[in-house]
Image (cartoon, rainbow, N blue to C red; front, side, top):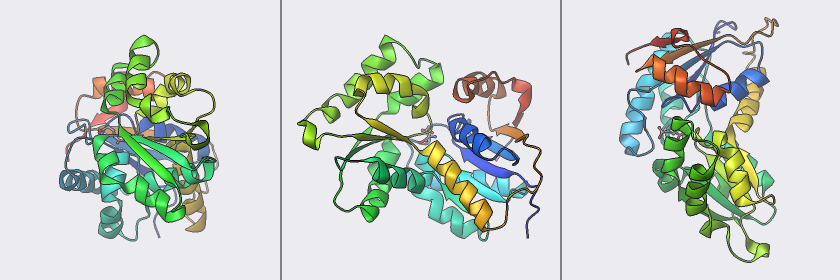
Length: 275
Ligand code: DGL
């Protein structure tokens, strides 16, 4: 039986997974978190599935070495190709990816039955979201568009104004056209970086479109698994302590990470590690 006071490991290719960490902290205020961003090898979104699996396994190994009691794969690209691999490699450690919870939420949200998946090239072309959604609702019509420039915009902190709006229009306009009855009514934000662009995306897509952000739904699944497996921290001080690890440039991690966390981060709060 693992120590219930051990941290929950959260892994992402970089800082983007801090959107998932923020949702986890809010949902699970009594837990400790150990977050690893593989900033030295970001982006994962344009790499081959084999490479992403190899990187994900090394990063997960680092968190397991530090004694985490559950592992969250916050990176959509890694979740799309590596979750089964990690479940096998680290059993009986519970490993939770963001694709299944996000797909379940999208299936529950759509009324028109027409969903648009947005993500990195790897996530969109691998088809993991599409498969997870069709397994639940085979009648759905699913489109998918890779939006790699959203990652760069979010990292740059350009999350409001005419530049991200123009990029969002270019990626999404055609996808959102068509007769109202059959139009996309749900957009999956299938990348860690996209939730910070939500304001812009809402304006571009119009009020009728719902957004599914896998951060919230993943946090709900983690809470369920902790309860079911008897892994919740019995300590109820509500302080949700966090340790941050990065494989490169802690200063950059802190600067860019502040955009994702919504509050300032100091580079002294980020430990540099090697995988
Ligand atoms: N974390 C990645 C994801 O959610 C986005 C950044 C990257 O390409 O590594 O897909």
